[in-house]
Length: 556
Image (cartoon, rainbow, N blue to C red; front, side, top):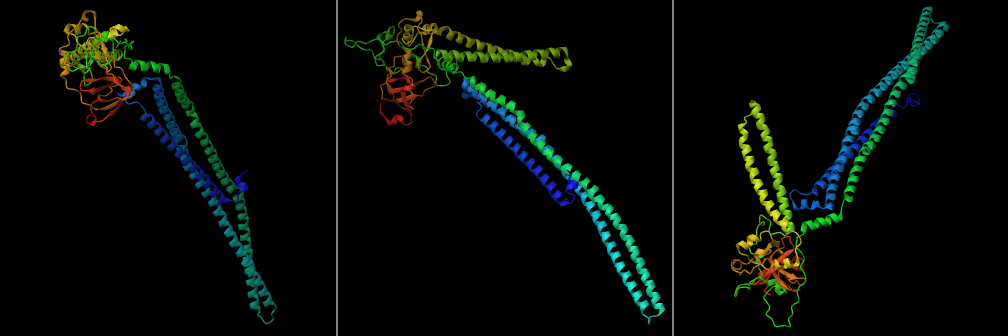
């Protein structure tokens, strides 16, 4: 079935149809282009979303990603970033394989279509020109025939009239012959032109136009095939990234399956474990027997004060014992002695690891410079070997400083690891019996420090230092220390019996002053009146921070 034979007279309609086909192709190009823009925008939004929730470097948020659930979330963010990359691949492939190729094809198609229809119009004009010639020859032949007929009738009329001279009759006869000859010539011309026109018309409708229309048909069919191929490519571009997208989704699933609630629970223990033993049973105090109770913040047994001198008469007993004498208000001591044993051990280990990494880095730089120096010695033209000596000496000094620093922290770490084994209840209770030690006693107990509720340490008694020492300079120094200002108030939610040194007992519903917020160790420092202050668990009180709190209430 050919357009040349079936649509020989539909030149104008074919011209409109092929133009419509090109418009459809351009519409499809626009559709694909908008799809690529959507893919790029979607990929950009996914990348921004992934970046937004990435942990910030060197921040507390980054530390949270040690938990498996947070690691799974981080893996999800990374997979989403790769997922976004596949949408960028879709956009790139559609642009290169569809829109760019189709745009070139449309330009070629327009040029080819223009050429075919130009040939068609040229053939149409040619046949129309011959038709006009044929019509003109026909009219001329018709006119000459009529003129010859009239001349013949005039001659016959003149010949029949007896009154007309013989010369006039001869003249009429000659005129009739001339007209007949002209008619014959016109007839011959008309016949020739008609024969040629019929030949050209046959060629036009059976050869030229079919050939041109056949080419137009082939062009249109190529367009149809091409748009079909592009639609297949459109689907194939999506299909090509499906396996990778599937891997991204599998990665998210695998990350979710890697979440280990037990492991996260252990990490919480590692993060917040203090290393202390829980308090034991409280001894019964028999108030039926006459006795003089000692002044204390809690109902601890009298055995707590064994080996400890009585407070000085007239001195202020604020419940501020050894753990709080030299409280560091800044970033904490260098040896992290303000932290509980387990947390201190972790911090020291972390510091030792950091120093070892720095030492290794310096060693690598030294080795590189040493090799460079050897090269300079063997090939002086490449550089001066003496120019490296200054840098090598500087690296040596840095390494020595780092080694000394690492040895210092390793010593503190050895102290902590030497005292971490579980202690007995007796030794735990005795740890609060020695508020002050003399110089030799403090030195002997350097490896037996214990953390108090605020994260500071008390000194754990050793065999050499278990003796009564009068409370003298420590108390004097502490008593002279300017009291901390109040930063708010708090209400006791539950009754708390302060049994350890540095704690304070509170009753449910009691209002007190806050003088120090929770520093992350779970304890808040409060004050009842000028002589009573100490630490309570943060979960036992409801804190109201207010700069004017001190003036808003009186001491209870």
